Length: 253
Image (cartoon, rainbow, N blue to C red; front, side, top):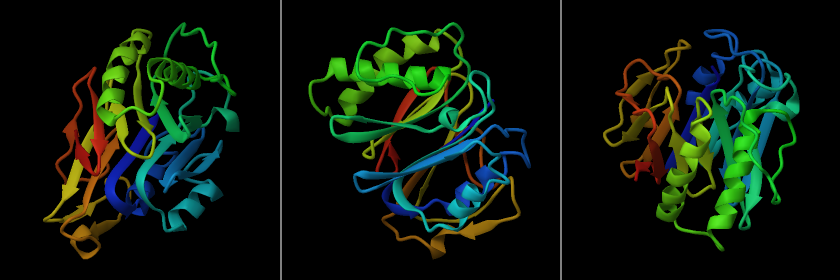
């Protein structure tokens, strides 16, 4: 099973702490060694890095751990291949443009016999079921709305579209347009909301802890979504199977 990590905040926030523990699952504390990737928004732009090497040994991942990432929306993925060869084009997250905005998507699961009709501008580059699902979602969103809809309208449309994909198998995913982070769980996803009063957190995959109170303001709000909890001393909430949540400005909406 692949691993997902998403972060949504009300102010640009450093993702290095969470990513450091998350990357260990790419070959050290777990056996997901078929590639990894991360995408994070800076304004309307996206920095997008993928590598078909293991996240725990990739020099690109080491660069990310040292890079001072400050973002309000981040999606990262560690791959365990089920469909498609181990190659750069099959590494998540995937990025597309719609309505003049970048969209970022990553998926954990396996969609069996999934071959949707793609007749618009969105077509996969690689061979994964994940990228096919992303292209179909983008195609159907474009058909459903003539212009950029609100987060509430997008959530409503996604709740109509997602079951049509999820019927083919496991469909845990993260999706962001830089304004919101959507997360859907067929099986395993967890989230935590960090807000004042901030406390100390310790990673479960690495001997590292941080006192968030020393690095935040009272008004900061951060939502972190992950396949399995990243820390041992925070209260993580498990998604109910079949639920789609949207996170905006560090809150679940």
